[in-house]
Image 1: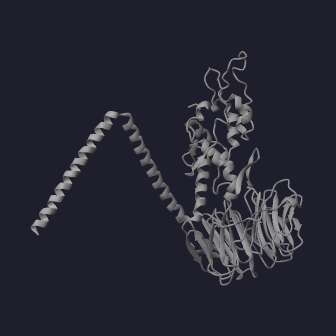
Image 2: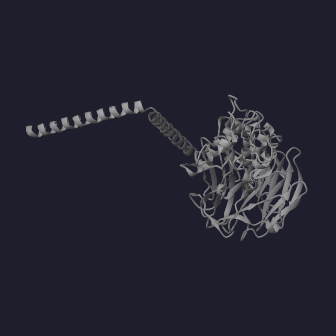
Image 3: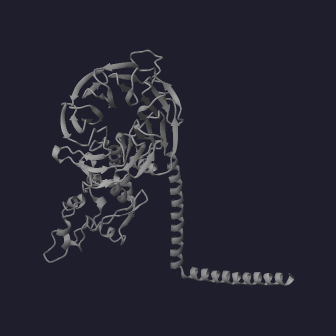
Length: 565
């Protein structure tokens, strides 16, 4: 089906579409994008539109530009004398136009016609939308192929993940994991293996099954307080107050990935890295490196293959938190926040006095363009980190004050930022309302923060109460929030039940919508068939007469009953 440019603007007077998320969105008028012959006089005014589409379409010469002066030619005439449509453009140009749209706009385009639905649903832009928010899907060995019976398309993966993000505002259950004898200082959720790792003052690492909530393994005592844990599908690293990194490699065929009990006694699977001169406070991993921060005022970058320190980033105060993304790593030391170039070892940006007191916690978005910090003052800041920006230009783009005590830990999974504090509460913050889509480059689409007053304090979307005080560490993922604190109990907020409830609500909503459309179709058919309308009116009158007779019969029966009494 070809989409004619002149008819699109007249298809709906309200010009509204239904997006895949169930919200009615008012789309831009397509007559602004595709000029018609009747709107030729206003072409200069419409050329100032910021959309990419008018700039590209205007580059095509009119087929009737060679008409005599005084005659009115049709600018939209196609090669066969018909109207030119959007799909007549070269496929590469159509793909580039769709690539410039964000997820909401691409969803609107897919609702216009069957042909555009096919083009927009199979467009590779959905892969960018997904990976820029959450990274590659877990457990996905190959890229999804549209139409494959075993794999979902990128659009289906994106819509499903976007739907799952709504769960954190729904119903939840709380599981309490008992096993530690003292305070828990570090928690980590490994989503790919559905495992939870915890450590604390009792100097052991515990491994928990995320689904069952059972302890599956306990490490031997490491002889120090465990303050940081990081893991992926190949390596588990823990750091503590004795300044060494305890590492375990994954064992193929092991049902729990790692053997932390020490039964193997093999240096290839269980080893330590030395180099720091003070307690280790934070850890992170990527595909080729290990990152560790310490109170010796340094961040060390380790090579995972050679197991040696590649670079040391010196700070001016104790290092509290770090977060690597791509070729940069962000860290907090004292009151300041740093962004470093990993290869050169030089600071790219320095945010001085980010908090009143120490900046205890730090996390970043997947692309690294959004940076969140939590401090001793109980304040959470969001900074927008651009590629070319001066230190003086970096100001908090948004601020939250949800806690009455220091913010010990932050975790981020788009769009939710979760924080834990010494006041015994967790704050859930949805950052979507503060962001707008931004095309950073031809291959990357990020976010820009909407302009707002720097004095405005944003409210959190939800507060969860931990059972006790001093919640030291928090993590989020797989529809769950994990937190550990001073009482020595690991608590898991499970929001998977909210997804099931939301699915049932959507199923009922779709059934009501289908019934509504059926009734509307029946009304249209009755309006177009007057004979049938007369038959229905006669049937209605008969039913009304029968109803009156039944009413009389019941009334007589009631009277006779009274007479007998």
